[in-house]
Image (cartoon, rainbow, N blue to C red; front, side):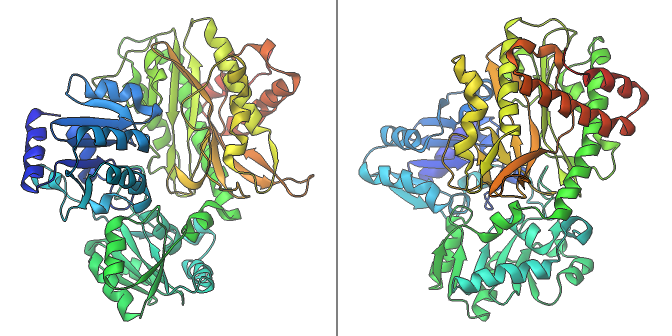
Length: 589
């Protein structure tokens, strides 16, 4: 962050007669990945992680991040006059109450916040006599002179061969739920719910194959959809049909709803920004604040989506194995580092049918960089890699039939002896989740401890969740399901796809994470129970395993998994990788 940017923002706030301002890392759709035009937090602070918030209060500035980004934030802040704090709502509120004084006003952009997100902050600020004020325009936008344009690429139909259900069928299915709730319409708050409902995809957001859109679904199954004017081709209009009204102005959505005599709207409070709720209330529309039913429907993949995911994971696993097979030779050279590894893996994926993009920026961490949970390699940070130490690669691909996400930790040569115990304890936690059988109705927070027990036994832990939901050619981080310590009250259901990724991180030394994607299925032998089945196909490094720490059942799981990897991928890889694969998947000795 240059001093000029900070001073310009402080002057803009003074002109608005507010003493503070919030700068979240999000866009008006509450997307995790955002267009370059919405990277306000990175523009101001230099921090480019996927979660965070900056706050200006008087002459003080703070950056709030969670445990995944502690080290990254320290590096990217550098010597700038920015205080680093925890992202916990209470910590944000307490800092603001300390930095501001009674009678001050804290400004915010209502398009970038939700009411539940602001609620704990507002409560604490009220106690301190500090007022929250929605601003009509974001002051950063007026001083960001080279701000990129908001993308408006073409939206395209996503065919039945990948979706397994026509859009009209989905709309009628969700419309029945709207009618059952005695609502006139459902607010479609973001591009992901629209992408699923209308069977459309796009390329407006890096790593997320969606077009920027929002809209209304009415109780009769018809809809109004906002898309930028040049995003809607004739082919798309034909795909959507006459029951979907397209508008190219966001305010026109509300006019369309008024023409449909909409008086009651179902809006998910966690997805819907404050600006939208204000527009609805200004029109005297009653709002039902409940979770969007599309979120759950989208999470439960149908048989076509699951078969597509299996196929995508086979191609992706073959690409990853070809990368891992070349890695030992690559690190013998002088000009191969973390960034070159990312490019090599990307080149392998690009050779596979249907590959359209990485599903996120690959985490390529050698030695100490691997201990930065969400490390993002850059030309400036890329470390040269050698035939020694431990390397962590967390990556994934977007394919029309599925989204992948896989992490492997590999030994490139000699490594610290203690890493074997750490790796094996992580592996034990991974196997505990992979083999778990649990009753229907179980939530992710109820099974998280299975992944951590072996680490807890040694007084160790990790500061991130154990698993997140994954979309079908959509977001690599999809709700509502997850596995973690925090309460979700969301039951894990058949058809859901989740990651299984326990880890351990020794600051300055190495990071360890083993991640597979799994899908949830009904138990064949135990009615009322659910189980996981592996989707990811890639060897787990034998060199880092301490066999004596594994039980016979755990060893059997590993051997069976490696046999499946070998038999599935051998026909799909080149000769060199076949040889490597045979060795990498041999039974554990």
